[in-house]
Length: 254
Image 1 (spheres, rainbow, N blue to C red):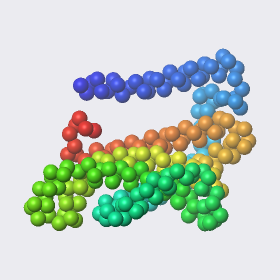
Image 2 (cartoon, rainbow, N blue to C red):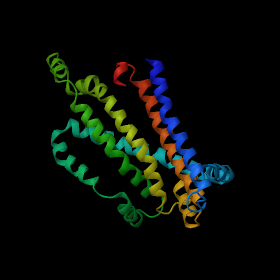
Image 3 (cartoon, rainbow, N blue to C red):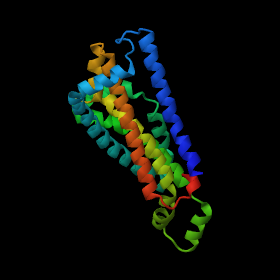
Image 4 (cartoon, helix red, strand yellow):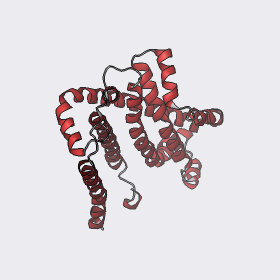
């Protein structure tokens, strides 16, 4: 069984390698201009050449992503717990949370600059807006899916509402919480890049904007691949944290 799973794990890697080979051959033999679509080998060479300057932008994006992710997820958890514990608040606020997701972030971003300037605040707000919703909804779903039989049993045993929450509902919601964290982790990188378009001095978004304006397509792809690697690394970290914290889950449910 483990051998089969390990073989399946190699399939996406094989597909990615084949895609890069097709991409390389198409650009080489099709004589596609580098400014239109550079070959993967040219992108790698450019990444190595520009790395001393690019790592400053990458570190800036990582820092911004982590700050926004922590604030956004904390805000989402607080909202989810508050709405779950106070039904009146849930009935009043939950529809507004749904409506907030219908506002395009790319449209709201310029307004945040007008309201809060070009500092760190509008960038954190952008990342918070894209992070809090997945974790809030996933957490509330986890609370609602708690077994009613176990809840009734604890009530019959004299458990308080807070004891039911901490001993039953919160542990039961952890898998759902981590599902929301995985989504928020990938969204946070995207939110950080979008926020850097607002006027940051450094960051992958700034690097991408400068490369695009100067028609350096190879550098644009360097930034794109860096964003992908950063998102996957963040996602993998959340998965590792989930496996470490939720050891009681059956193997088949992971």
